[in-house]
Every structure is written in C-alpha cells, then in structure tokens.
Image (cartoon, rainbow, N blue to C red; front, side):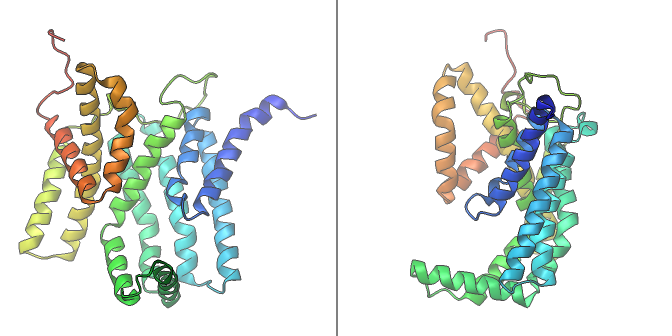
Length: 321
C-alpha cells in the first residue's frame, strides 16, 4: 500500500529536481535552473534540496551525454563543460544553504560558494576553450544565428576570441551572479522566509528578507581594494591582478547593489511609497537591467547607496519616525 504522507513529502523535491533539469535543457530558461532547487530547500529542508540537486545533476548529465553523442559532438571538452558546470553550480547552491553555515551571513556564504564553484569547474572551462570541437560548435551556432538576424558582417572567429576571453576573465563573477540571484529568487518563491506550514527537521540556511539584508562591514574594504586593484592594473598590467580584482569588484558590487535596493525600499516605506514601489519597483528594475548602459548606471548607483550605508545608517529608526 502506498504511504500517501511519505509520497507527498518526497514529491516536491523530485518535481523540483526534474523541473531544474528541464529548465537547464532549454536555452531560454537555462539561467533559472537553480531556482527550483532553492524552492525545494526553502519548503522542505536541506535534505530535500540535496535530493533535488542530485536528481537535477543526474538528468542533466544523462541528457548532455545523449545530445552530444547523437550530434557527433562528444569530446573531452564538450563533456566536461556540459556535465561539470551545472553539477558544480548545484553543489555550490546546496553549500550556500548548508545549515552548518547558518551563522555566516548570506553575502559571505554566496561569495564562498562562488569560489567553490569556480574551483570545481574552471579547469573544465579552460579545457573547453581550447577544444577545437567546442570552437567549431560555437562558430556554427553563431553563423546560423547571424544569418537569421542579418548580421553576417561580424567575424565568428573574432567573436569567439572576445567571448572566450570575457568569460574566462569574469568567470567567478558570472557564477556568483547565478548563485546569488537564484538563492534570492528561489527563496522568494519558496515562502520568502515565512514559517512553513509543517515543521522542518533540517531547515536550510536561507537568505534573509530584503528588508533585513545587510553586507558585513569589513567587506567594504574588500570592495574598495578590488576597485583599487583594477585602477592599479591600468598602470601595472597583470593578468592575475586583473582577473582577481575584476571578479571581486563585480561580485561585491552586486552584493552592495542589493543592499542599496533594500535601503531604497526602506526610504520609500518611510515616505509612504512602499505599496507603489512593490508594484512598479520590479518592473522598473527589469527594464533598467535590460536597457544596457542605463541599467549599469542604475546598478552602480544602487551599489553606491548600499556602500554608503556602511557609514550612514539609512535604515536606522529615529525617534522622529
């Protein structure tokens, strides 16, 4: 006889793991493939999150091998990048939610998780970047897309060099962005920190609500040092300094941009604009991010606002409030 209670308990992790794999296997929704795993952890606990991550990694690996083999594109480089990258990101997302790290703040956990993911899959990306089959696949895909869009004037080989160098130089920051955003979005869909309907034996370490999000004070010096390193690299070029400083500056700027968003929300709430901001804020933010330069400026201003809160307590409640 089927134990219905146990079936309900295990259904969500399995569904979220399968959904994660399905999202990864689609080009349009691949950036969101970590979100269902975070939802599983938020609603059912850490072990459920591990089950979802494991199932997703298993399905993705099998799908990648089958697709590459059927298209005669199976090589050490394509297999390494197709299997190791999603597995490393799933592992790192679970690492960020590890209950034993609950005393560490979310921003620091995410930064460490990005380092773990980079160490796990950077060798595969370096190997894939030098794989002739990966190069040929990229050129073929670009030529097909360029022909469809009517932009055939661009040189695929030159674009491959630009993309390869850009991805490798900012690899850690890219992984951090995926992990950080997925944890925030998944927690939002998973209940946004609200107490679960049923008690969880092993609650995952979830991000705080936006209103309670804060970056530890000492990290501001790491942010300033990273940007100073980028400035120094202009006068004393160094590949190692450039890569470390760029990744650190981008990742920490994102941390402080989210803190700036929290500050903006608190100030709007104090001015009585919170209901309107909750409605139009996400729409405006998405439009700004999608607008290119304007989006970068907006994120920069939010990062500046978040950084200033290190010294100016914008969210402190005064007697006059």
